[in-house]
Length: 283
Length: 339
Image 1 (cartoon, each protein chain N blue to C red):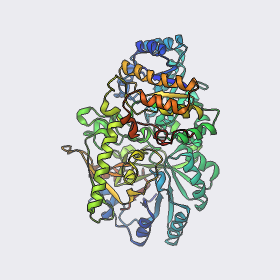
Image 2: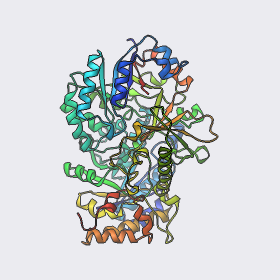
Image 3: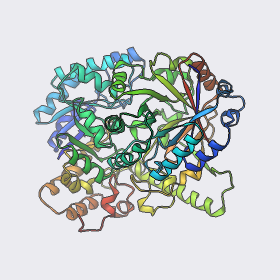
Image 4: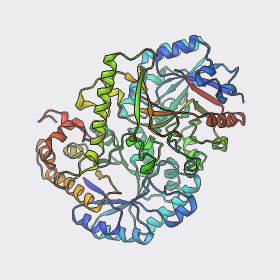
């Protein structure tokens, strides 16, 4: 199966930009990144839209309609990303999901969203998002020993049984620190890998999303923000910790950037056929 | 509403039962677990575990002697297939010792327990990040009888779920031990202190930039710096006012005592005191705060009177007034006398 490429965006202007420009994997991933070499000659035919991490970044219905039109006009496909949800967010999904064409991919990061979508919209193709596919991903680990102590359980029979029960046919994964290619072997599922950033931790409370709030309303759940995360991000560094992976805070989530060695492991896993798609983050 | 209290030693059970705990939860780290898996991840906490099945049996017996219930946490965020097999064995031994419920977060383990121990009481851990009725219904179909909601839900969200699913019990956090990130989707390790400790308390320095590549303006920089400073202050509150006690020896926050009347009205079955790894004195003091507030609510005092009592317990109204010690700050922000 040939390796696919997709571009993940978190806003409509980003989507328009990447539909108009052809993606240069060396620019997005780094000129020396082994995954850029693995994707050489592969064009992005799929765009990830919406948000895995925040209920306030789900697009309004009219924006989703426009995005779908733009993607279709470009001869491409749209995958809608969804976050962990409250009942209110699921009600909003009830307005968005009918807009998706038959066979569209829907990334679910919440078992409740998965159950809801499977029951109400069986024509959609469900994908288990990164938050359902748990593994240790701490950018501060100073040796591979830590990673070996906490292997993931994604190949387990009972986890797979739940995916089957909910008709989830694909999984979305991150590249853990010190990953070897074999971390993706034996999953028995079609898997996509996000690059060049993995997420390490995600909150509901949001520091940057509190920027414009009254002091007593800050850092509390359910407070609607002004989407400051679309304007600002932060590089996070621990003084004197040279072995840390480059760390980024965007919105309510901490990300780390793959090392060259990690990307090489991912490229090898792709070559082995253990990864079918690379989801590159648009900037 | 039941008060759910942590224990980490057998000798904590009787005094906590005498002080009004209705339910207990504990962890166990069997000696052969570390030998088999080279790590201490049988549950979410490395420390604060009972050390043997003998201790577990004794703790269960003491809980029952006080008419209480004992739950066992098997609540790491994820397990390997081999660990799931070992955990099912632990679960069976717990059941055979007379234990009452298992607290579980990993979907694979829940599926395995549903198969191996049909009908045994399962409580869904907050680690499962169950924040909606659809997810709760799915878990109920697997044998889950109680959902422990994650920390950062609103009262309205908790009430909506309890109303939608009256066949399920719901439990919420009421006191102690804040997380910054959602427990179920924080994939980091509480590292040893010399390596940085929990990531949310680590010594990170943040450098902001605009994502469109333009330079930050002076006013933007000022606002970002002000927010960063305010966040650090909030973090201090989030972690028990710098991991301290009040002058009268009580734990600080996070705290939901003011919300007890609203939680009761919403049909919440149980309120959870966090802090398995804490000292016995802290557990007893925490239970005292919760029990005395709950007693007033159950005696029919008005919500405002209960809230006023709760806010007076620590004799530090200036800290309460920030709202940063609150699990449910919406109670504090609501005008007095409104429902």
